[in-house]
Image (cartoon, rainbow, N blue to C red; front, top):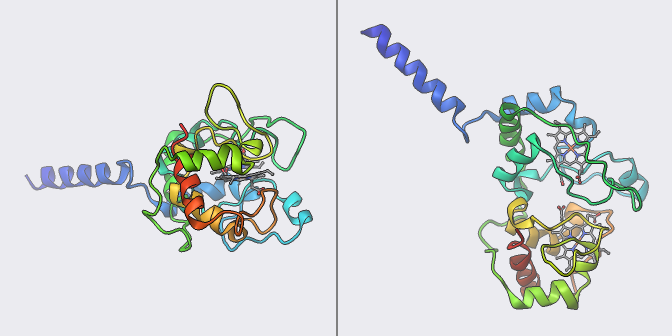
Length: 218
Ligand code: HEC
Ligand code: HEC
């Protein structure tokens, strides 16, 4: 009897520990380090790059705000099956993205996701941006500001520019609140960047509109 209770208790604990959403961030950090992810990504903020040379020395994007930037479900999936995000190779303006990002096994991807989702920044306020087919946001993205000239976006007629990360699946990949925070406070995330600063060019309302619009991309 007692043994049966102990066994079912152990089974229950095991179930909880392995259920999605219950993976251990500490284990994820160990897996991250064991896979040498930190050779190309830094996970402690604030942003370290100060000059173009610093940016060019980086081998991959910074992950210190990954928990604020990404949607959890997308992250867990991408780490198992990474598809190119930037059309061009990291830090290159000419070479195609080779699509050779290291892959993680499903279990490892879950724990690493759990760890990366703990890396948040207070500047990203939750619940401000809801995805919305916002005509004003669309106008800004397509015409008023040159967003589409540098970013791929979903559609049939145009595919968009190659200079920036693809936004084709931004609504599944990015946290809508982060998109807004990024437009509003670009320098916090990217002190050295190739994307223009829209502070002063776009009002806060316009930034919200365009963030709502980008958050619908699927
Ligand atoms: C050899 C360098 C290198 C290693 C090692 C590496 N990455 Fe990356 N990582 C990159 C580059 C380059 C990109 C950009 C890929 C793209 O745009 O398609 C990237 C993109 C990412 C992204 C998306 C970030 C963003 O802002 O778009 C995540 C998340 C990520 N890597 C996690 C990991 C994890 C976890 C590991 C360890 C298993 C790892 N990486 C190992 C170079 C690396
Ligand atoms: C001159 C080219 C250019 C223009 C114009 C531009 N971007 Fe970008 N954007 C970039 C680049 C390059 C990055 C990658 C970060 C960096 O290097 O600054 C980026 C990053 C982003 C990201 C983060 C994507 C990610 O996965 O990390 C979003 C969201 C974004 N831009 C939205 C916009 C919006 C909305 C507009 C218009 C209001 C815009 N961009 C205009 C070049 C541009």
